[in-house]
Amino acid sequence: MLAHRLVQSCALLVATCLPVLAGPAEDANAAVDRWSAAYTSNDIDSLARNYWADAILLGTVSPVMSEGEGAIRAYFGTLKGSGNKNDIQERRTIVLDDNAVVVTGFYLFTRMNEGQPVPGPSRFTMLLTRRDGEWRIAHHHSSPHVLPKKQP
Image 1 (cartoon, rainbow, N blue to C red):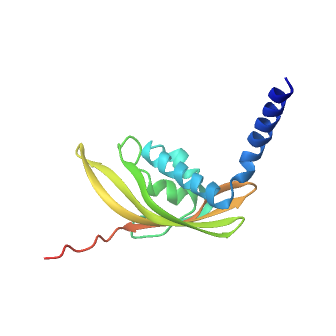
Image 2: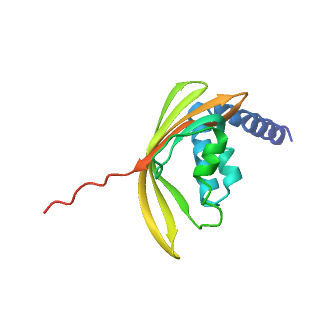
């Protein structure tokens, strides 16, 4: 009985400490994963909520900077129901401080064109910041991934 209670107490202690183990890198990467899931679900509202209201987006296929919620929503305006997907393939994380993290890497967009999937290898950099305990994107730069040239 005593051993059973000791095991229960230890399990409770470990369970309550687990959330504390997550730090800025893990929290920021969870926000990046939420962004990717929202893109893949084609949910513009959810996608836009991943950005701060004053965020800046340099989109993969945009010739302009999209500043603020309205411009970011407009950039993703054709996403709804498109079937487009995003798959984060590789990333690196730099913790600037407890409230700012840079995540950079490669992702693959799969855009549908006349019912056919068209791969769009791309690269990204996101600055994620924490405000009032919440992580969102403050700056997002995305561009086509320049693939290595094949040797003759």
